[in-house]
Image (tube, rainbow, N blue to C red):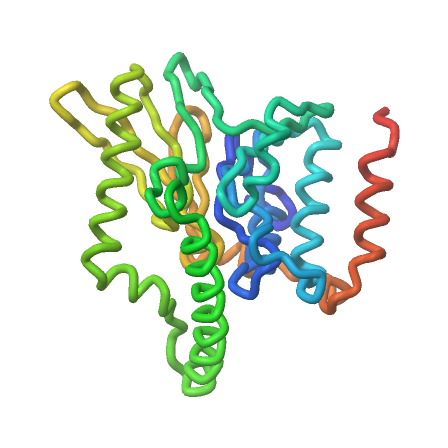
Length: 283
């Protein structure tokens, strides 16, 4: 791949970006997006964290991610926004379409004659269904942990040590969390098998995966795009083949320089540029 040539991707699935929170790795996501040329982008929930959104914290790189995605739409890239729990207020707009952009709660996609069922996955979360206030309280605690993690990683970097993810380590070590993930995957797979789907694609649990799950009724390929808080991962499908993208393994994307003007918190200029981009007549 040449220095300025972007890598083609047929389908890109992103989820759990959590724009508007301190844990979001918007800089890294922006570098990744600038390194690829996707034909279709599926934003599979929790893209903007509306539970914790505050006008006091919205860095330029967060706004630039939104601007980059809207820019893709003006170049005929199809962008499908599937709602999650942190952006659930968009669910009432399911079915909305504007040019190459649409909002849905779930999506059934045909890929080389195979059926992919794509949705965020919070519908399987008992806490979400029965005690939403508890889930929101947990989200605040999670963001606080990210604050602590940022300080810990700053110290580790000064000592020449590798960064760590406290939230990932905690989840991986707690049996109930591991059991929840296993149950989530089996539930999604079971319903997909019952409906004759070949793939089931989720987000929500921040656990990237591609695996074949088999039950007494059949088998299905379960995929999860992970997140851009802990894992910095996405799903890519190109020429019918799925893979997990991991930013930490992508030296070319990491080498992309972001303009200095993206730093800071003044988003007015970027917002105006985004509007001009959207309203500009197509040639």
